[in-house]
Image (cartoon, rainbow, N blue to C red; front, top):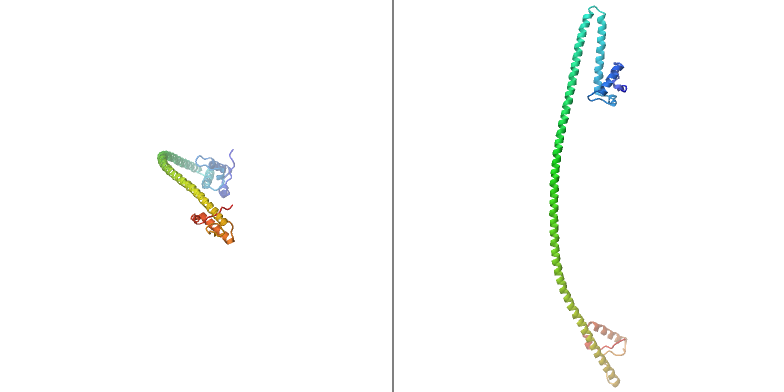
Length: 274
């Protein structure tokens, strides 16, 4: 069921000149017409189509009322039938003219709709063709990029493998050279270790010889002191007892220096202290 007209108050002046039936007819024409119909919300606002249609209906309504008044006047005046006949003929011509204009308006609307439809169809076809062309170009570019990417990947893999192989060869060569160098160093270290061991053994032997020499000298010195009161103390032989702290410190210093400078052992004889 169609809703009741509820035009905007802006059209109150025009609406007051029309009967309810025409108001309802105008409302239905605006909201149910085939070409560009208005929603009820739009029809309730200010719109140029509403103004145009209401003005047209007001003019038509007053023309109709004027014709009715003329018919009444013609029936009440002499020679009114001739005037009424001419008026009827004139109204017929007006109706035909109005139908012709309405038909032209419909034809123009249909032509516009057809052209708009054709233009939309043509535009859609152009869009579809362009879209298909762009899609094909995109796929072509994508395939080229994918191919280039695969080729670059293969190239980089080859370069990487070649570099790894080269580094492995260099590493093997370096490792081999390093092993040879390490073997030489090991042999040198073995020689040095052997020499150091021999030197230590020789040093121990010398220590033993020096110790034996010192013991003999000390033993001989002690015997001389026991057998002869005229025998003087030898300052190069460490005494059994120290007569003073200075003498003790002096011999302690000589003993420590002898550890660093072996030649001191040639000039002095040290006793074994427990």
